[in-house]
Amino acid sequence: MKLLLAATLVASANAGNFYCAKIDPDSASGAKGYFSMSYGAGINAKFELDLDLSSFEGEASTCTIENGLTYHIHTTWADSSVSSSANAQCGPDYTSGHYDPSLACSSASEDINDRCASLGRTGDNYPCDADDFESGNFAVCEQGDLSGKFGSLTGGDRFFTASENDPWAPIPANYKATDDRANMWSSVVFHCKDDGSRLACADLVEQDEPCDSGNKKLRGGN
Image (tube, rainbow, N blue to C red; front, side):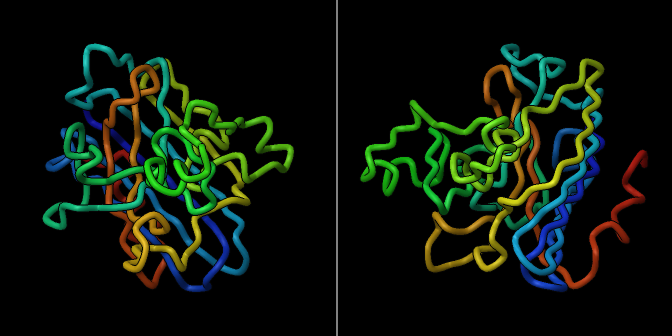
């Protein structure tokens, strides 16, 4: 299947910082598109995304894409030879766990076996709920848990779209930080809602101009 992904996350924290992830069909099992983030002043984000998974290849038999997707900011990007990937190459050895500096501690938190464990948080009772988050209780969610904060993506025709404002966005100073892996963020990963399997992923690369200017040509492109 091809994945047409166009996602824009506009956040505030450091003016002039833009983080762009291109999804290349040659390295991502037919997945194609982009995800972008930009920062200004304060931590306040808006993101938009469009995903067409009608031709993406490789989902497991336990995954029905029409049932929806979850999506998260992950801590690492291990394979510097590619800017995007799919399936097993989006696994823990390549993208690690969710960005979670506040230790909300889902079972997929980067820190689930370390600082979360020291607080007695196993992930079994992860409190993140989109309605609770919308009411202003931001800290119940991992900052990297986009679908936890805003709900999973739905698209019965394998086309997904969303637009949300995010007051609990990743912290720019943590982008690919080398001093503490649990407090860094590096990549975006899209999962099958049914079984949690990782479908497509991409490295977030810092640049000094808006991602949209160079990536809109991917929308609907071949």
